[in-house]
Length: 111
Length: 517
Image 1 (tube, rainbow over the protein chains, first blue to last red):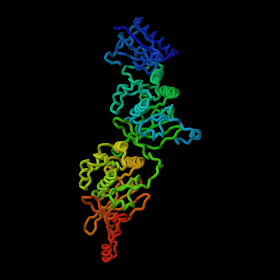
Image 2: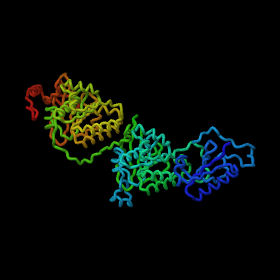
Image 3: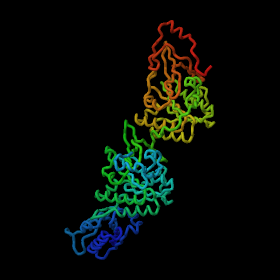
Image 4: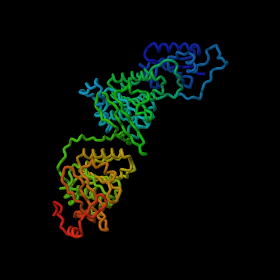
């Protein structure tokens, strides 16, 4: 399994962006330990990346690896929904209720 | 004025600065273009050419050296690029030249889930960046409906779009936004974007009337500035895009002249007290075979033989047939075309819409710069459009002719052989300066032909109904019909008291036509 990588698009250094980054870190720590990369992009500074990923709203979190790409829109206020949206498995050291990892649609194509 | 509310009447004196869009006819309807530094909302149902208008707004700007930013929410940039090639717009080349920037905000194909709060600040940043890079003056956003579809939170989207428009206005940009309106919704969108985004609302319509497609544009409101009211037909042409047909272009200011020109027939000139006026529109109406095409032929020949440029539109017969007709009456139109004085356009009416024909005819007039124009016949065009669009066609056509200040001879075919008027007559008689009627006259067991000048604005003319005949030289006008009535109505009755009077009248020498020996 390739290492997880996420890109977070925020606007400026506002509270909402910082909160989102914080929540994402906590989420990743819980689900992936330290086995992930996190890139933070300020769309005011780097519009090119926003163009390339066609980001319209902020905050936007994109799971760039492993494929398929997944996107979550918003400040990730709901940790469980955020985990599902970003295709994160069960928290490390704790199985899901039915003892299996959540299903993933691997045939879905991402841009 | 757009509005009569008291707080706005003060602005009347200070007209807003407008940005000429360059879209043919559109600046006429908007009376100078879109208000500069403001947002204009374009609403319309699916397929009403909103995207074309949004692209053309930028394309025409680029022709004038103004860069543009195109924000696409619905189609991917690549699709817009490809779809617009047929309209003659090479967007890729403009992008290379730094005159056009896309902000592609079309829906992503990636799985996307909304988790918590967000805003559209990234969109604003991208648009702002694109504007900075190109120093754009024009921005198109197409279409807001797709933004509403993409982001469910309507309150948020409305608030964000309002903020975006405010920001673009502050940058001094002239903005065009499109939004889709459901059919039969009075042309307004379901998101009530109108209320908060735009001071200016333009409605595009594409309706089916009497089995004919009809596209129109209407300026619903334009705050603080003047615009023309009502629907104006438009067409979308390959290589050109939207062409709005400006009805009643002419503020009737131009001087009418007293200069007379020949109709190409000396006897008809005499009936008209010396010929047609140089800047008048003459309608010749009659049943099929009464000699309308011959009148047109003589009118063209009369111009060519005096060194005038003559433009002939034929809708009933092919070029070859028109040449053959002319030859039959002793006129060589092929030689006339070679000399450059005559140009003959033969169109099959059904090949395009009335709007397209009108645009093509205007182009022909603009290129050829004729001294006289003939159209044979208007009735052939009548059947391809609705009554309304035919009426608009005639208004548009006569305005173009008036604008050029040239003489035009138009023909109309009446539906019944004897007497009767054509539908065309009813539409056009008020738009013409002169009307000539050609009629079959059934008398004493034979069919003869009669001609009369029914009206001639600004001039005396003969009131008689004269008999005429047609031979290998053309049209020969003879004596007035005497002692009969009802010719125009197609029911000829003898009005002579007795056989004696009738015989006397028949052998009385009629006065010759004025000006003829």
